[in-house]
Length: 433
Ligand code: NI
Image 1 (cartoon, rainbow, N blue to C red):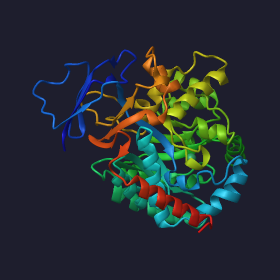
Image 2: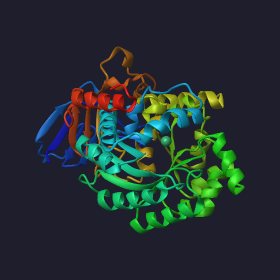
Image 3: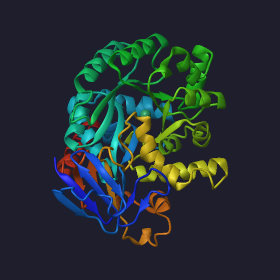
Image 4: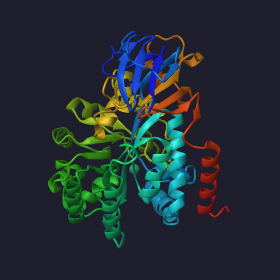
């Protein structure tokens, strides 16, 4: 692998708000950052195979999308503006039944294409046919934490266990370490306690974490209360789920004691503000979670309920939503949102060497073009990233030390082919061809 030197960019290390270095430098050896910061921080004996001139750009860690269902890009715009259960039972689930193996490959490839073009370098996925998903991830050059969605009811429950075990055994640590696997029990209302206990045992056996939807809607709260006489977080805690590393998506409806349980048990939360708004699920108490010390990252959720995978939008929505919900403009300032979209997201996914620009971290970084009218004047770069930048401002994306997009041109995939194939597969699904 080549040694890269990036010079001229304003470097945001994301260590703290003071970590801004105008006309800074970043040196990458193989897949790892060896220096990042002010001009002159790169060791004199560093031999660059390639120099990237990034004057006028801002360099920062790539975005970490903590919750999605990648291949749902094929269902983007197929069904919108409907109540959640009607949307699921009449539109999404019947169509998911018809998904074939190759659909997952092309749907995920489209997802990776869109994510790279909007500056995301890592994502957490929960879906099906995960070997196809992993293949698409491997080829795209992205980093991902992948889990096979497991529904613990009906005849699919056993197959889900078998598939998940095979997937974890086969793919954990593959693609030069870019792929990490998890178990993906879908939710407390689709996985009975005995099933969850079995999955916990397997996660422990294979040394991996769990990805699960938690407390997304009021319906779920009601259902869990009826079945188990308690709330989803307490129920999962009673079962022992939180003794393992857990990525909990949504966490919209929580009381203060549940927030404290999650902080004490170090549960990672994937906050998905746009999906929660679009499905009218509610507003997650992000402000209170952060105050209690809960680790919170950001996720887009699937493209059927967002409808894009744009982390810049997600940051903006997260900040604005907390401000309006708390009727307080001070809540969730730009640096905190940007942190959620980068280093906090990496922590939530259990990736200790991702999400910061500093020596020893994996070289996952993006260069954002700032010579744009909407990013001028440069009073506050963090504010510009969260409140003013567009995903189309992302110019260059480097993942694991490899340039995967440069000048907005994707180098790992054939963009036209991916879009053509995804369109074909999506239209077959809905019977248009
Ligand atoms: Ni989801």
